[in-house]
Image 1 (cartoon, rainbow, N blue to C red):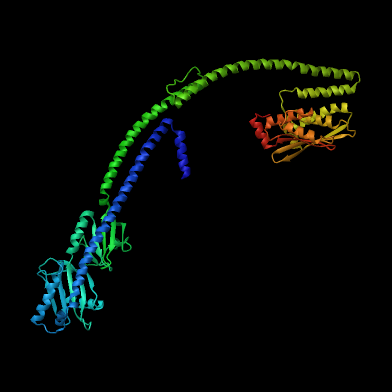
Image 2 (image 1 turned 180 degrees about the vertical axis):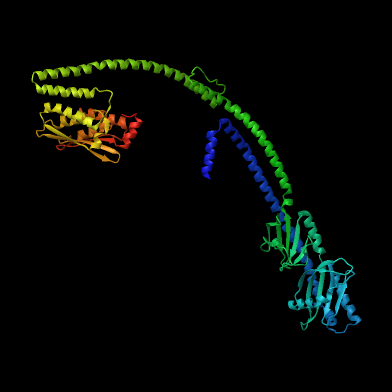
Length: 606
């Protein structure tokens, strides 16, 4: 993911013009906040609607259930009346069915019916199969005989406690079917606590329906009331009242006794708010369709989207105009640079403003003037260089003249049988010829050793063979290229300061060691050595820590050290170590072999 973003950013920054970049930046800075604010506002609006709706529905459900619980509590209180009336209990235990019994029980039933205006009817059953009731309507339940055994059984199982029956459909011939729910209680003798009858109180669903219609008119949704056995008490869609819940999807996301969840039913999203009654155990669930709940929010979102598109179009036009005005001087400056590249220096940038582009234009004009001045200077310098080369060419006549003169002297010495003078003159000529070869700065180690051998042969005439030397170098080192005239100053120091005052013959050895990509060439003598004070001073002088030296030989060593560092870098150079009476060793550190090849390429080769 990061790699893709990096490549996209690189493509945008490299492949596009400044005007496109500025346009994109302007659009990003304008559109991004609008989109972010619109999105956040919409989400907050949706969240606020959901929270407020949930709070409102929780409160509405709580109020609804409180009213329903209050009504059911009244029904339960009504069923307690026979428990406290000894007169009513005396008539219930009597097996006779005379007129006085019917009137007295009818009186109590009427009294109980008048205690709750929402009640449908009250039924009292004695132990002898007699049913006493007074209907608030003109009809009687047609299923009384079928329900008697079940009512008695439920009442007996409850042991005097009330039992709430779920919704039942009441079908009466010639009348519209209706739904009721009931409260049943076993009537027990106050003295013996034995069952002497059963009381049943029916209430129509109108007490539920009116309140649910009000909630559904606001939510445009569906209200469902079920008991613990998932028997439907009430359904605002009138699909499954009084029957077991047939669609388990309605309860798929509902957990616990109360709360609010988002659920999907038949492909449509709903917010389901629910609460369970502590008295009845009935669970009231209100399903609010999200599309209706978010209708106003979507209108606001669509309006915001339209305004955003309009703002984007206006921002695009404005950003193009602004970016064009901002980048026009840059395009002009770029065009002038192209003309300069073609060789036209007689141009200038017209500076109108004092901003960064104006500063850039001013610097561009100064650069052109400086380029013109430099071209004039280079022209003058080139002329002077040509003159200097001509003078140098002419100056080469003198060294060649000296070399030719030495050859003449050598031939004259041979004619006079003076072989020593002839040999010395011959060697001196070779040394001069090696030194004045200006076109060849780099030589092989083999060539440098040959020159060193000629030089030492010449010194043998002076020191009368007081030294001997040997070179112990492997073949691959002999072909290694190095700076010319590197060994001679070092060996010269070894002879001048090592041989002087020493009677024994001094041995000088040249050998090499390899370390990683370093070639160390060691020049070791067994001369007098250097005292510690002078050695430290000489080492400081080689490292540039002091500008003076007490030894004349230090100048030659420093010259070699600086030539190596200038050629290869500060990681290479000359190191010296010495012990008084034991001798001196000088080490040349050079790059070998890949490092040397890399340096040769960077410096233009040999």
